Image 1 (tube, rainbow, N blue to C red):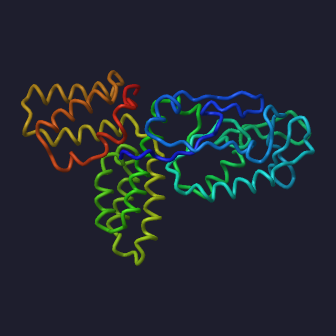
Image 2: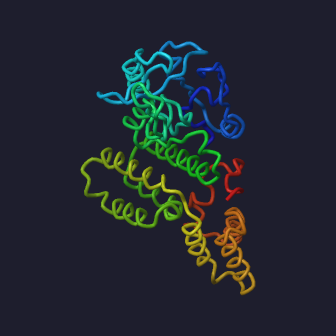
Image 3: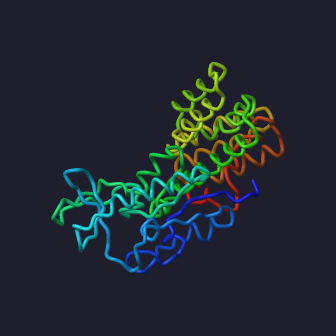
Length: 317
C-alpha cells in the first residue's frame, strides 16, 4: 500500500485561514502524522459558496419548515439552499475517498452535537448535524468520518485510521476485478480485526459471507458487504474484545512454547486486560512468536498491522 490514500478534510484543519474569524484549527495529528500516508482533499463549504473570511458567524436555526442556516447577526439572511446545493454537487464527486475528517461544532461540517438555535432566541440545544456533513452521510454512508476533537481520543483515532485502511484495501480489491475468491480472502484477512470490534456482528457478517453464492450479482453483493463491514468497524474495539482475540491467538502457540513462555504471555495479556499495559505490548510478543513459529493464517491477519506501524497508534491504549 505505497500509494497515498485519498481523505477529505475540512480545510481549516490543515491550517488554512478560512474560518469565520479569519483563523484556522490546525489539527496536528492530520498535518504531522497522517500526511505522509494520505492525500488530503481540503474543502471549506463556506468559502466554496462565496463567503469571505472573516465573515459573520453562521448558525443552524429551527424554523417551522426545518433547520435552516443563517447568519448570527442577520437571521433573515438564509443560505440553506445555497449550502445544500453545493453539498449535493461536491459530495457527488467524492466517492473515491476512503475517509473524511471534519471540523467539530461547525454548522456546515459538524458531525454531531452542533448547536441548533430556537428562532429569534439565544436558546439552543446540541442536537444538530452540519448541512454539508448530513449530505456526506446521506450519499456515502459507508465512508469513515471523524471530527477533529474526537481524534484526540487514542481509541477513536486508531478506529478511524483502521477503517480508512480497510476501505482502501477493499477499493483496491474492487479495482483489480471482483471475484468471490478475492472477497473471501479479504474477509479471512480481517477476521481477528472484526472479532475485536463486535463479536455478534462478526458472526452475523460471517454468515453473510457464507451465503455469497446466493447473490446473482457480485457487484450488488460487494456494495452490501462494504456497508456491513464499515458499520461493524465503527464499533470501538474494546479492551475486553482485544483480550479475547489475544487469548485466541495465544492458543496457536500452545505446542511450541514452554511453560515459562506460556506464563509470560498469559501474564502480559492479563496486564493488558487490567489496563496495566498498552495493546502494543502483547501484540509485540505475539508477533515475535509468529516470526519464530510461522502460521499461515496468523501471518495474513490485518489485526497485527492494520496500518503503517510508524503511525504508533497502539502506544496510547
